[in-house]
Image (cartoon, rainbow, N blue to C red):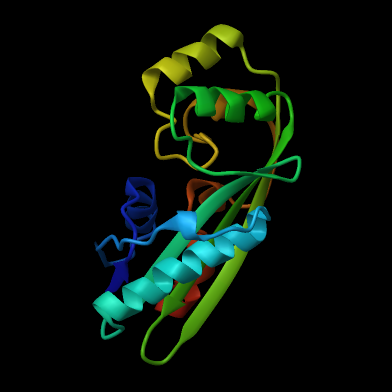
Length: 183
């Protein structure tokens, strides 16, 4: 049994898919206190902030797992869109380009600590303008790092992938399984 210190339904589904016994307890950490624009550094700092908050509020009697995901498009940090105009700008930058999905995760039990930053890279085709507008109107991009929905909108535009899909979905589960004794 572990504690997933995240409100992400996708992360919860990933743990379920891989047979990890967990309870989900989101923590409150203000990512706006992070000032770096470097995508990898931001993912690390956000995860570390969540991790420290989770340890303070939840302890480590039950092993703890935290994660954060951001998008790197042409060296530009892309986080969750704040509104539809922001989402449109974020997606416009990704259109027909290479994007990198960076996921940092931190795990701690009484006996072990594990930190990982992983990357999955996608080459994307040019978005269909009408499909893009439907995606924007659907608001399915809300709460998604860089508005990226690999399992949804972006799926139709992936030309190539390098890295784990689970990383792109927000949790590199395959990398944590050995530490949980599941493989």
